[in-house]
Length: 438
Figure 1 (cartoon, rainbow, N blue to C red):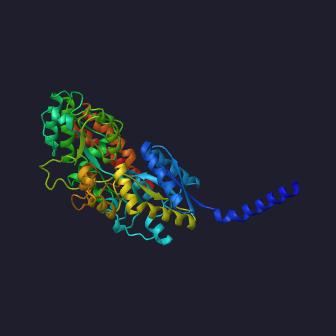
Figure 2 (cartoon, one colour; figure 1 turned 60 degrees about the vertical axis):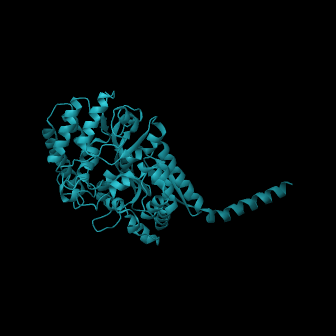
Figure 3 (cartoon, rainbow, N blue to C red; figure 1 turned 120 degrees about the horizontal axis):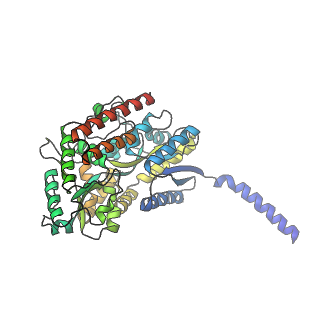
């Protein structure tokens, strides 16, 4: 018995040793910044890909907020242990582009791996943001969104307002005054992501430049133009309405979004990706609408710009690892997978085929709020003022802009003085980034 057991054990060890090379998988590290339900989406996608084939294994790791993930990835690259894939929010695009050798353009990854890849199959408003001026895709669109105006239908009814939401900024201001008079005295309307709403999206939606050089797309030697008439007029309106208690500031990021789902703020501008939270938490009848516009600005509305994040492939990896990354991106681009992601999470479908399939199914007739950001992005052919913004150091610059906006809303500065300061301080940060990028 003892002899037999030893013989079988040796044979078993030999069999395992012989089998192990065939079972070896190439690991693909994916760092991300998603929490809650969106984290579940990331984990599930990795699990589905891993189950679909045996050669590669995607391993996901949460690295904190968007800025935290960006900083962790840059530090890891410098230390020589960067992940294969890193999720970076849209305002980090210029930072990633300027990091020499840190990235491998997704177009090259797909081509080298022999994976079918046609940039024209993706929605142009999305891919344009993550491409060079020559059309080469640098990163892979993943969780894309845009800004919309969420509205509380029950609140509008209570205030005697039409069920159809206001379309222009003057209409929003008047509706908010009536909502305040109807009992919503803490907040008639508000916005999350204050600079994204009141500078970046405002400029694009009105075809007004935020900066020179096509909003930074044509070079790092760009200068801001955020103290022009449109921006001063808008901030003046917000500051005046803040004094009246009609507009109520909700912070620099999206931490104040709960003011909408709680019923406190009946009109609220924030990301279309807010859909999941609204669906889960709002106890009233709700929907969303396109961002308001100023009717006296010629050609408005133009088109919105995307938010969210894309997947960047880091440099210095092995060819077989890049092949695994390419196969994963092909997996993510699958039409049915994109349809499911869009209809369940609220993030935008990244391919034209997925959008058309959802549209043809009649889904948007029952769920019009999921098409709103797509209609905004595709409202008109993007111009150099509405393609997006690509400024170096924009993460830090947004804080500078927010400080000045807050000074105007608090009455510490006039809106013009605040935006002049925001423009000047922003330009100083641009020059510092430009020197670093060189």
